[in-house]
Image 1: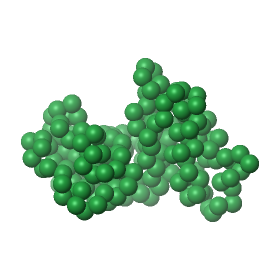
Image 2: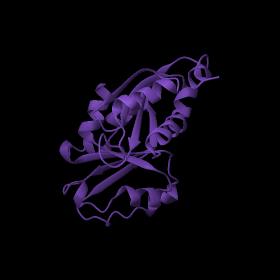
Image 3: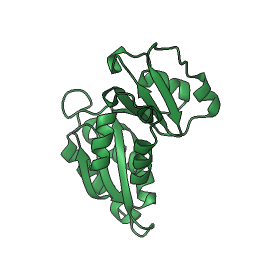
Image 4: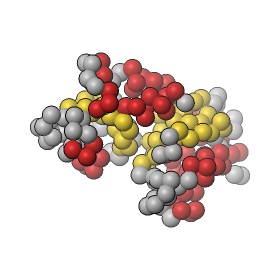
Length: 188
């Protein structure tokens, strides 16, 4: 039985977003968006479309299929392109909640300097407490559920809140998006 058939009948299809980490349309970890969309379709997803050519995929699927997507798609990418991308999946409702619930945006901070790290899992409270607010002076962060919201006045290249630091300290994998990209993905 193929991947498409495996996801049928597992409940009502909903809207989802997959956020891949470290993929590019050219160069290292090359992954053309057309191929990526085809891998999602082969994994049982419908209405697949990519946004901004950087590993943002909108799709419809049942919850069971959406939960299986990271492993199914990563295996296909690895077979075709030789690398296995990490991926975080959120429902459209979860993405909308992140957009509405960014505590740094609610403070009126410059949206051009806002970023979000979408985490694969909710970090333990002790791990969140281990994040050092003085690690990168001038930068601010807030952890809410499975998102880390960041305000980076010196930009991504000027912060010490790197994905590696956040992964290691929080004990889970995350993928980074700037606020403008999050808005574009949410708009579809």
